Figure 1: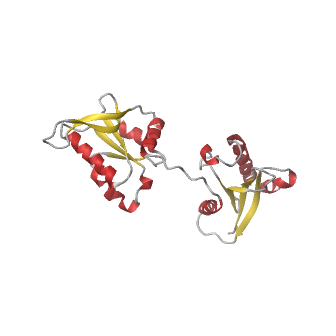
Figure 2: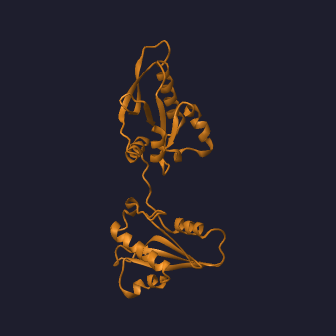
Figure 3: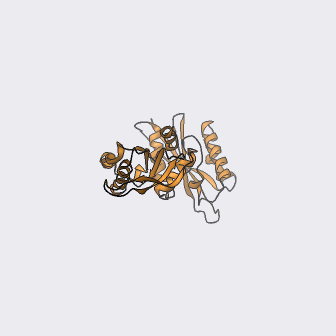
Length: 248
């Protein structure tokens, strides 16, 4: 079966006529698959990914809905003829025809989108900022920069051991945001050991952005703490729900 694909473009300044690709529309038989910059699979728009394209979120959403409506009601030719009717910041053009496709069409749409649409670089957030965001999304109130009693060695005096977050007045759950590297994890293990030298440690949750870790070395990386702490992936789309389950 063949597939036709189209580029959806925006020209912020019609005088300069410098179109920018913002979406891909794929037609395979009666199936239409649309991928747009800043729009997830549920249709929700991420405003951050629209920065720099020159239109408001509401305008962008109305045009996305327009293209989807034309595709799914069999009137895609009307979307292609937009420039012929009136000057417009949005347009759709035929990108090409693929005579034979293999596999699911949605995977082809994903590939075309990744090749044709440039997304803004996602700023790298510090683990502590990511952790604060997940805590807020999960609606979990914590104390920051808490201190727990501990000893660095058995024959040394008791000292306060710092952690990032504590849940409850008695810090029954202690949460630590850290980078997924051996040094940070080793330091967390050292602090857990210090707290355990003066009694039973509270529940510990290590919060890490695991997309930044080498996946082949992930098990070895986490082994020093995974028997002593729960592991939360800050990069997971359901991180807030996972955290709620871990602290309940």
